[in-house]
Length: 171
Image 1: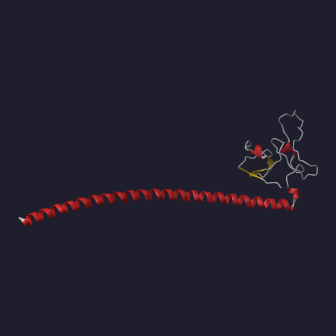
Image 2 (image 1 turned 90 degrees about the vertical axis):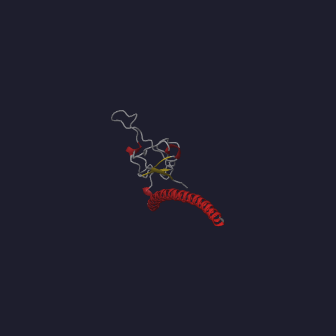
């Protein structure tokens, strides 16, 4: 009889321990599943960040190439100032307007520079009131002020589509 009670108590104790162990195992399995899901989410996030990083690196390399090209162009202009765009070397066709012309008659050129020596400020080809300080890419014409730049989708001189602009800091 004592042996039977002892067996029953051990059996009851074993069932209690087994149920607690099963509950703990289920809980740990759920934690593992949540951790695996979170790991997958983080790996996806990491891949997205890596792709974004590569895109930023490509953009930085492109901007660096533009900067090198502009530096090279600037060095050429410093070596040979005659390359600088002023009223003296702008093609007359680029500066003329055909809106109000009569047939066979040319409109007067509207390109202005300040100062009569050819080294003055080149005025904006759009508003003609402020100095040109915006360089259009890819044509590299310095022909717009910062106020007009936002409203232009083409270079005012050559009508090339505007890919980008750079504000030139004139000293």
